[in-house]
Image (tube, rainbow, N blue to C red; front, side, top):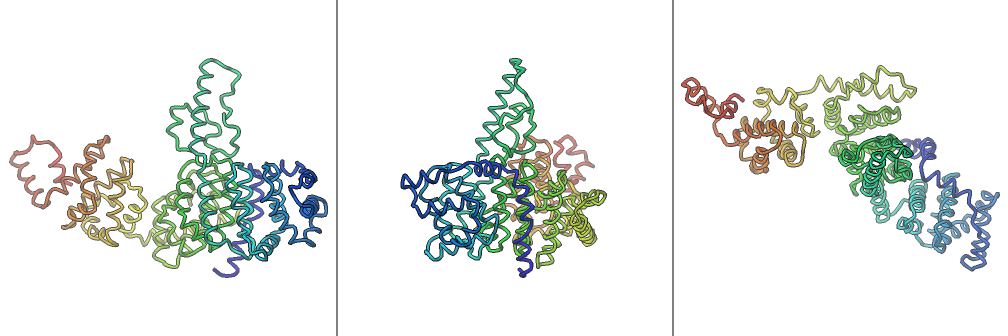
Length: 539
């Protein structure tokens, strides 16, 4: 990465993000904690802190904080870290953490005070804050996390690998924490509301959420009037951790540092972000998590690998549904990076085709009609439109087919039903160690959508029909058994396509069979037989 790019990444949107974060639960609580006063005198009198630490923390709590800090930097680091390890009361720990965070927020170079002190003492600056991640108090945990991110991103010292992996794994886990318990709470609250409604309790406001303690809940649940039976079928709202904005904020900071990006990938962080984005989350969380994907795509290698996580279809869906300009802007920025950043032009081309497949061009033409205050949006819309239109002109039917299969979103696009396509391309499904066939077989095993199952079954049948050794390949990949299981599927279309595919897997000489059927028809021999075989002959 160039030096300029590195500078850009470090300074990116920091103040803007903090303005947004000012409404988060963590920031609201920090405001309340700042108003409280700690009686440091009583801590000293009961010999819980030394007089040296008392003098220092009192000065930091006073009006001349900045001046004192400048003259006694090392002592301030020593005192604040001492207090964190010697005080046990939650309220006091909360206050000390807010003090530290405020010091760093006022001047980010102050992180070096803590790094220098730890270096001289040959101690870990990370340890005290990582230990606090195990506390029960949500504020302590998330404020410690926020300070860790600042120490890791704003100083010259990078977080060592073992601490880094632990911290990133923790952040990743926090994205989905509490979801199940929260879902149960919603179900119970909803059942209670229904019971009250049945008893004609008019004092209960049906539209008020029964979960007011969770401020940052998914917007789709905020005004929920659903009954408990349909509620259970909703996806669990993953942004049910009330501190999720703070978690997202830490990730937004960490992933701007190139060395931290690969560590995040190694704890399977991208999959977690994608799975959350494919469920229902509010637009602020959507924005933060797409921002994380965006900064990841500044690394050319990650930009090349990113769509293996199916990021393009997921973001195309969000782009289609979203009403918030900042979410639109950040998705377009990701799409642009996915085309601009990869060093392999073939990968950029595949990304363009994937976007075309996911109907991004249609969205771009809608966005072109709208007026945006943000020039970046207009510029990205123009860039993407040009690139995608060019890729449409170069698009071969096999490129189109391969992209559709890789997206996992099969539909009856014209390419499937084209006999010419299968004659010319059946053998190409063997490329890259049968990559596309493996995906088709995997879809049969994992997907519930009847349309996808129908199309995948049909494609496997056509491959076998047009490639002489296809039958053996499909058997070795486990496809035959999966197609046969679909013969008893509840959906009649899936059963029909599975039956056709099984017949193609069973029959050796298609041309011969077709001619025989024609002869039989002419002779009226098999007119009364069940209809599947003659249909198969036509296929």
